[in-house]
Amino acid sequence: MKNLLKKITRFFKTDKELFIEELNDYRQILDDAIKILEENIQILKLALAKHIEIGHYLDMKQSNKLIRIESINKLVTQYVDHKKDTAAREMIREKVKEQQKLQCLNEIIDMHNQRIQEYQYRLNKALCVLDNDKSNREAFIIKQKIALQELVISEKLDRGNCKKHIERIKREIIDKESYKELNPKEDTVNEVLIDSEIEKELSIFKLNYSSSNV
Image (cartoon, rainbow, N blue to C red; front, side):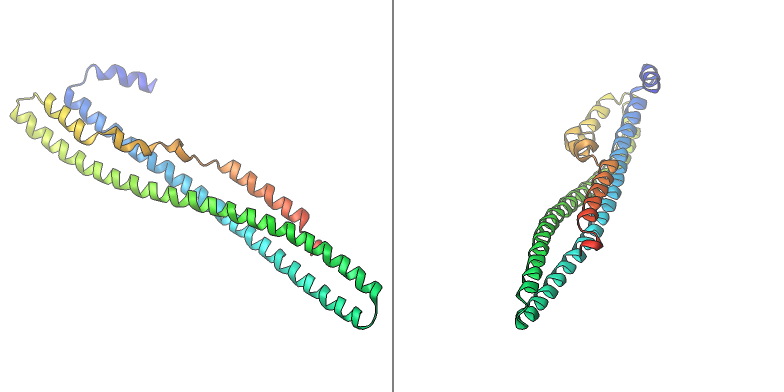
């Protein structure tokens, strides 16, 4: 309804009014794109922080496994020294199990580190795009002010006929080809999906590497 009303009222507006409206609409596009990017960046920062927290948890489990294996090695050495081969075999069996768990844990850590790098890349990319979009908006605001000043002068010189001036300004400052990167759907962040991934991974880690298995 709002868009329909806007289309209808356009028929009753002057070229100058339509031009000013177009400038304001275009500035709103810039503002909206920046707002979406800022929201996405906050989501990515939160997701990255959660993944880093999980990474610390995994590092702790890895450290505990290494300590456990080292302790078993010492026990095996003691049993061998005391000619207790049966006990030594059992501890070696336990060591093999721990090594298998450690290998699986190392694979998960590698996968998780890759996930962290992916989120870091997306965050850095979003920050670069945001910086570029803010620069574009600042440049557009300056050009908008200059254009409106020139419009007033042109209106006086041409006695109200400023259509040619408006067309020239449109070509100069409303260049949509320069703002293709403003499409917020290019790297849309799904907060619910990210949270779901994090909780799913964490539950798997806790199930397989709980404190009872250390």
